[in-house]
Image (tube, rainbow, N blue to C red):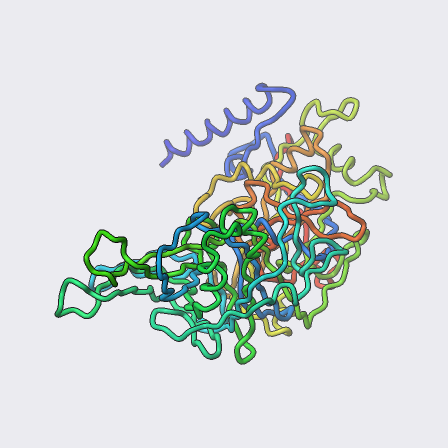
Length: 567
């Protein structure tokens, strides 16, 4: 044990020496567990807290096309209700189809897969699943009502009023711009009737969707074994599976064989402009679903039909089974209807707010200003005063360090009193929030340097974007605080003359998405080019945090910096 302690002391001493002789234009970021008062006798470790300006930024409609998935359903929390629906184009699996002779449509099925994980097998060796993508209150999933319409609004790929080649943005409030509204009448064309059938997720006469982790076992008649009525042909993972009245599809698709409308993508998209999936609550409750609607994931409309067998058989009435698949196209738009009982007002960007209101989708984010304002004692800006405390400057450029930054954290406390008054379910509180550079629409350097678990969103980037700390560490415990480590961001401000930009804080559905710098537009009346991280657009969750002007000083947001300096 003593030998190990001596080795650690030698390593620590070596690191200290190296930090001063290695490079006079930079310094090593020595973590506080390596350099501390027990093993560094010629250096002091200390910490300071700095005030932070934080304020709520209420959001205008947000761009909801070009998302990586789609949301559908009803979500309730302390803010009120959000209802999400979406419209999508369809693309045929083949153009200029030859359906054959004397076609009879047997059935038409819509499939919208959930995100799910195979967790084991049943007694027969078949896979079982758990759903990863449904948010609901209580111990079981709440049903929703789903109505499907033929969409009559043409979804454009390009913005006719924008620059050449600029893609069209569509927004959460059913608009293509502040002056172009997408009417309900255009979205709600012919309504498609649901049919009662086994292995579907709906009750036909009421369009009620029953959410379940059960697989769909598809069977067909067994033509080879007289003792067996049916044979299993396929097992589909959990999702929404709806059987539709085939009459519409016989007229819309099958009857158009040989018509130019089925000959090319452009002709088809102009002829059949897609489907509108509209969600509604059931008994004033519902669930909120993430749907795996990307290409290649069996999100489609499948027309099952039979046709006369070719003349190679002696049976004149022999028939073959076939399918025609219409896939959900890439051009899809989510719409969000917010019925908030807790209004979100624009905050005070100069002085900061007592509370920060964070809400995903067309909700709210927070603005964060570090070292804002002027120091009354020195007359310097708070940022210049901070730099002078930590580094030596020449012509406002870094030359050497006075203090070494070991760790820097932003601490946000949950406004527990407000959430409890509003009756918020702790399971609704977002586990993850995301900190980003507003000016450049990108993550901080700390995000790029955090390699913790890049697979599971719940445990990724936890060094930088700490998970919500909950009472007793329980997953369903009430939220206490978030700790966001921004050590590299602070070092960049000190050493590399980085601009002290305003930061943004938003709830996040999946922090892994931010690595691709995915942000969508916010629709502003002044045409300003502000954006929002996609992971916040996708999340319905919300919370309330203490701001810098909270009356509870023990919960006030602050920046803490741990540092080392010579005696």
